Image 1 (cartoon, rainbow, N blue to C red):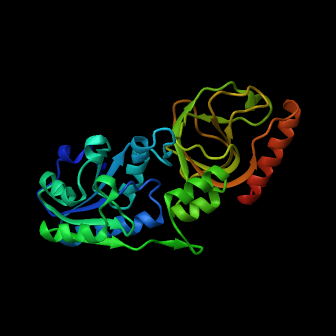
Image 2: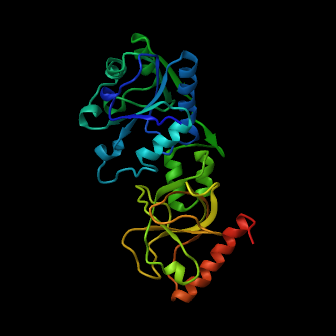
Image 3: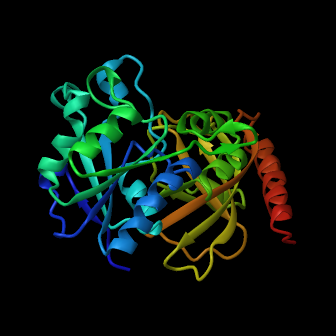
Amino acid sequence: MTPIAQFPGLENASLPATPLHLAIGMFDGVHLGHRAVIEAAVQSARRSGGVAAVLTFLPHPSTLFRPEQPTHLIMDQANKARVLHRLGVDAVITQPFNREFAQLLAEDFVAWLKQRAPHLAGIYVGENFRFGRGRKGDIALLVAEGRKNGVTVFSAPRVNFDGEPVSSTRIRALLEAGDVAAANALFGYSYFAEGPVVPGKRLGRTIGFPTLNVAWAPDLRPKFGVYVVKVAGAKAVTALPGVANYGLRPTVEQAVQPLLEVHVLGECPFNADDMVTVKWLRFLRPERKFNGVEELRAQIALDRAAAAADFSLR
């Protein structure tokens, strides 16, 4: 598969001279609600022989407007681009969200886009999209300005799940509560961590449960605890069943930064420096401090058995 094109800002985007269909938003997590917007842009691009691109922003606007309490992002730009590529997006444009951009008048937004992307044919957003200084712009203004500039506007209605709108805010709350299964239903895919295997202290091996230490430092930290997972990588034909602990390891060291440790149920083909993707499936229990290594070993055996039962392994 051809790698997705990525550009740091619309003024730096080198795009073909074909109709540009541009989905605009933070798209943090690329969940089911986002897909309604993105897939509309992709389908229009395919019909017109054009390009489907996403215009997203970094940092999150909250970093500028309320720096004392910024919104923590579900995924980084690299993983966002990876998920967008799977949806058929041709290019990702990451626009710096700075004070200059934040001062752009809502009435000037479409003209600003058109000046930097003269082949802009369509804009695709969610129905609650707001833009321009003070968030004054709404869908009605976007449609009106689009008409002036020869650009069509598509507004996707909000997607509901279990009677409530699917949103990044809702997913963040679920991840922080450890309810990864519910979060996955809203994502439309499994929440995942990706990183290289790094050398550890080999404690797991000494107590009969060898683990992979995965270098992973998310902006939004999910609840510390034990999860049922699958582990994928170049050395595995299919994703392998496993059980993971994410947290500070209070029984053995009380780490300063949380660690992701994965125990593969069965033979593990991965070694240090291998890139792996850990797909989180279900929360088993919160992390807690045990009264010594033997009590920890007994609990890990129970965790392993619970994970094995999920995969019907003996």
